[in-house]
Image 1 (cartoon, helix red, strand yellow):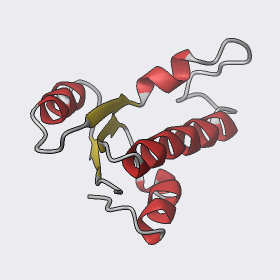
Image 2: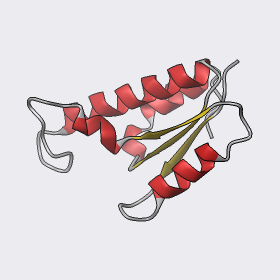
Image 3: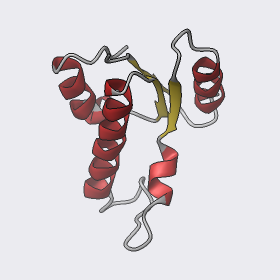
Length: 106
């Protein structure tokens, strides 16, 4: 069963993580997960570029695509997914692709 993916975006410090964690913990689904997109940057051990600096575009795209793939796999496994991060319109492509494949994205 494919579960829905809920994206919670906004500026830094607005409570995205707190809200996402609470929603995942109180989900009506039997299984739910909170994906904190900032964590994905912490996985880079060599060649990290702060995401707001020039030259970070390719890294940022890879990070967004990785987070989207992770969310999609959890969803396919029946987990309701809450994703929190700063996701501007320039990073919606991977999420739209998931929705077009039939995963319920909110």
